[in-house]
Amino acid sequence: MTKSIAAFQDEYGRITGWPSDRRRAHQLAILDYLTGLFEPGRRYDEAEALAVLRDHSTLENPGLLLTELVDGDYLAARDGTYWRADSRPEPQEHRG
Image (cartoon, rainbow, N blue to C red; front, side, top):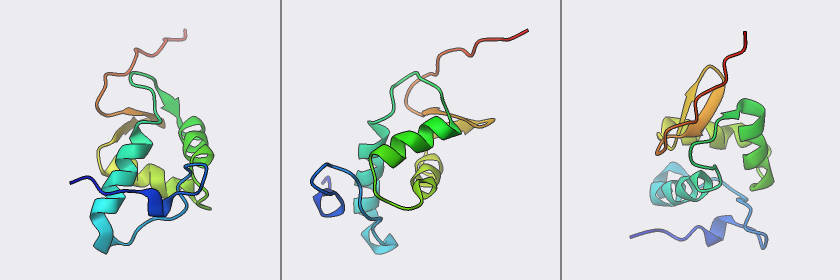
């Protein structure tokens, strides 16, 4: 059963709060929603990833959401680069 995240969104669809650990199903529903904001196959540097989360939440610390996304295996991260864990990232350009 998918939990509704409406109680944690404003009229613009932005996330306005982070549920307590007792409401883990709601946390997972929010993480699933946020994952959909990231393009499959695209790499994001930390600033870009935080900008996506800042644009879709009113939380003072969007880094909390980024940490939850990585810890929950919704996003993968390496060397300050993030991508959706359910898709293969585009190859990085090599600079010489």
